[in-house]
Length: 185
Image (cartoon, rainbow, N blue to C red; front, side, top):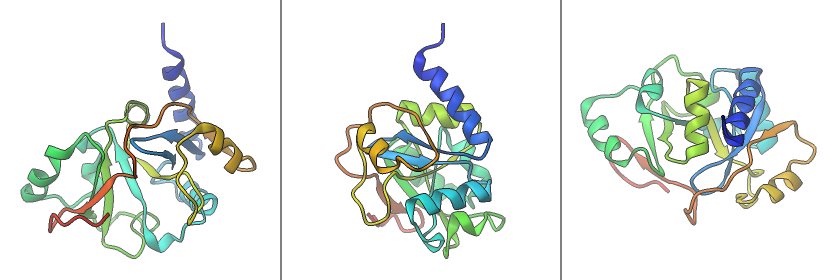
């Protein structure tokens, strides 16, 4: 018999496939996500978050294989990133030329993470593709760690919420440059 959470994940995946924005727990905070290749969904997410397109977005995935089509990988990058995944480390990696500007923003790279949070990982696995993942808070406002605050903050937004516990991280995930290894956040 499927658990309540697997049922909620299947429903959330239906919403994603229909072009909706969802909210879900991640390693440190609630995230907002959608299908990265659905421009209208990404624009809706950016509007809800009040985030400029130029900044770019993070993609999360259940495996490196889901991210490969988006990235210009070489063995040195693979050797650098794979020991940290799945886990709470986001890497900035050169993007393939086809990757839309609504994902990369003003950059030639893409921020990506193979998540170890069970709900976020299951969402990506059942969707069969990476998801956009950005913290579920309007830009300049504190990140949201509780579904109660999420409901209050986005009461007027059309967001499907996958309730669950956020991970144990005190702050959002660390971000590193895959070419230099330098920590950016």
